[in-house]
Structures are given as C-alpha cells and as structure tokens.
Image (cartoon, rainbow, N blue to C red; front, side, top):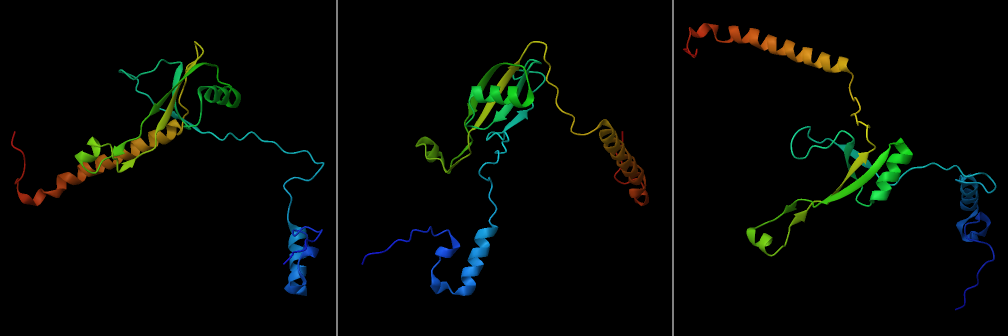
Length: 187
C-alpha cells in the first residue's frame, strides 16, 4: 500500500479531506483564519527582559555570630544561579553597586523512618536544597529593608491591641465578684 502525499500542508484549511463534510470544512477554515500570530513577518519583535531566576532577601540577625556588615545582604536565590548571574541580576535590574558575591548551598532536611534508615542512608524524604548568596556592596553602601507597612498602620495596630488589653483587664475585675474572695492570691 503506497500513500500519496499532497503538495498542500495539513494546516491549510483547503487541504482537509472532503469526508469531514461542508460544515466542518468551513468551520476549520474560519478557525485557521482567526488564529492570532504572535509575530508578523516584517514587524519588529517586542523584546522584554524577564529573567528566569528569582531572588529573595533574607533577614539576618543584628547581633551574634551570623550578623553581616551593613554593606552586605543575604539572598535566597534560584539553585541554578551562579555568582555571575547574581551579580548581573543586581547590577542590571536594580543598579546595585556589587563588589563581590559568595554563594552557599544548604542541604535540605531529611526525614528518616527508623534509626536503621539513618545508619544505612535510606532517607524516606528529603526537602530540596536551598542556595543562598551573600552579596557585598561597595563601601559606604547601607542596605535598608523596604517599608512594607507605613508607620501609621503599625501605630494603629498597637493602639488597637492596647485597647483590647484594657477591656480585658476591666472585665477581669467583675468576672469573679460573686465568689467572695475565693481564688485570690494572698501576698
């Protein structure tokens, strides 16, 4: 059995077989003509820089062994990123004056079923590894965390909490008034 090939491509609506019927062929023609092209020949391509990687700033302690200098920032980064990628990302996207980058890969937590599993290195579950980048900026640069909430919001929340505490204290005076002193702490 030899098969004959048509010179027309199968994506062209007129190359559809006649067995589909006239309604199906017209529907296919209309669908083929309504497909939007992402790029038209001769038109300039719209180019946007959308990096494949992600970075998240990680808060470090202000005191103690793991503190960082004021011109250093710790980021959790995509595991595929290299030192060069981190530097280029920060310099080109944010215009940060990067002096040096150091990376660290932390092994994910392992879940063992029994002590024998640990002995024979047969983990039941392992979380993904995390990659951290320590970025050191030029001298004199001080990293400041962005303000997520305005000061007014924080003050309002604190005042609301204080009012709730005061109401609780007022109610506690009347809560056991009928008990006649039972349960009071004698000092």
